Length: 192
Image (tube, rainbow, N blue to C red; front, side, top):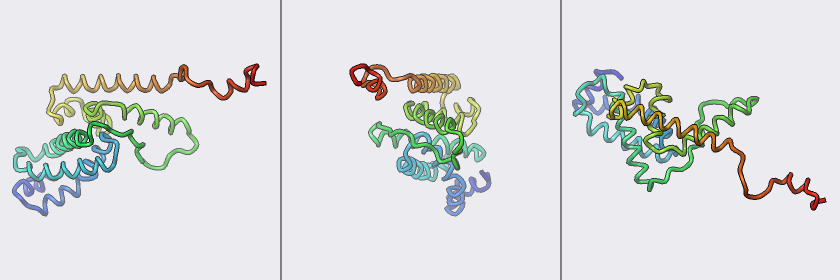
């Protein structure tokens, strides 16, 4: 982000702030969508984040910290939006990251499995995973962005990955009990 633009916006220049919103809204919205899993929730959280950024911008001491600071505000807006949605987050919809590879069924299946596992994560775990792996932030920057101790950031990432692995393992196990498969009826002696 252009430091001069941030400085002008800090001083109340609405045109400078409009340029900042144009430059950062899509990125903040994508972060919110990945954390919250629903576009309409992400839209609300991003709009709230932009309002908070405008309101709190004069308090930002270092213009070069704007990006990390705006991500923290976006994550906090996601937390608030999730609470407003009564703590019930819907399943993550697969991200439309471009055309799907039609001849590689495994790629689509793997992405679907990852999306399902991610949707089961706690909001705090989703946030650190998005910052660490979607934005490719070093762990130290994740901690700084979220204003949490480095050890807490490492712990959240560790537990989130462990939980993701457990969810993926659970999905890969065949179902136990329940109704027999259709093939079981065709091969049983009484079905003949």
